[in-house]
Length: 458
Image (tube, rainbow, N blue to C red):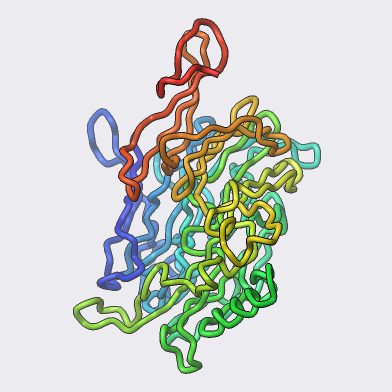
């Protein structure tokens, strides 16, 4: 069978609350016949329909699975990472927890029957859809073997389950969540927080998170945030022109994470799990659309406004990009490093020329690959044209080189050919008008030659 998850248009500003439902479908590769369908939005009378109040499951759409599925061939299960329902930032037309939106679902591959599920975000109004593939890893938990599945999220949390039963490896607590005052919105009273492992990036914004390189810059950061609401993780979006005078909510992690689809890798020998992440807030502001724009009561004003400005500097303290290594047998962080050098806009800023600013890393969506001997890192979407090899046990940089353009959101890959080990990464830049290309290196081995970009093999 081939199992298909629809990818639909992003829904920050949906034209209608009655979008197409993004059912998961399986087809017979020999006959082309449809074998089964899984309803990510339950139909009336189906399991989970009661989590959609006032019959909102009948007209609400989206809730697809646009990132890659994961299959366990031995169990015969497929793990579906389901995205949010219509729309990304306003859910007033779909009150309720909204199964199976933003839910990890295990189904039987042969029939599509639901085996188990766990909703990672109740009533998602942050665009916190599940974006990275579930990762299968066999662990030793307190001396006992466990077949685990690990799900990284935009909100910088890792959820770890027994992939056979769906039981959390470590307890997941439902904690009180902030309430929305946007007209007509429904917010879940609680959200699920894993007790282990710890988060891999920052969550929520307070004044303690603002830059303090100089007293003047700190005060400017405080002043810049006064028109906006800030708060903990799951602080809901707010009106662009709210009665209290605010212009929306600054949310961290933002709509790109945290982590994203290219951010994770696992080492089956050590039980280590790696995740790259960014500290990148987003302003969530809601406006009433015109009838020509949408039939929804409210829609998102913009994904990324202009952000509050502090003389061209980020208003949050660094680091702005991280790589975190976990020992998943213990559910603990082994090391965490700022990912990448300090951006020129910070390094060369006249206000900071006499200060010793530690390496900040950058908010670049780095793509990573773990091998038997190292962790390979492309600086990623929006980053400088650098590619690195890191010691996977310590995070120490072993080797780095410049490439023709930043690595794309595609992952690095490696293969063996005639006794030689090759590493390949895709690079290119639409903004800089640098065409997409593949850059390859070969590790020392039998034979001699040059890498595909013309340089000697290393």
